[in-house]
Image (cartoon, rainbow, N blue to C red):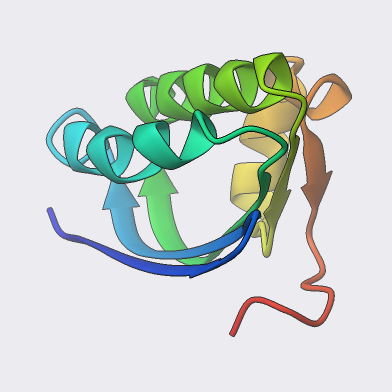
Length: 110
């Protein structure tokens, strides 16, 4: 179970590229990386999950928490690069209706 988190910050823009698996073992590391950044005022956070091979409910919980933080600080939160499997996970849980998700990566996260 491995996870790689590549963060790029430019003023209020935060780009995160996640690789590997997001589960009960790796979710705390993901939370530690993203949560402090989600508390910045008017942050625009884009999370690229195109290289995530697996995610369980623990990972979803991290993204819900980060999303709530970003929104409460007048920011924007988007998840891009979802595989069909991960996109379905967000749809089944209803999070696709709340969180801005896009299976396509729109220029930016590299």
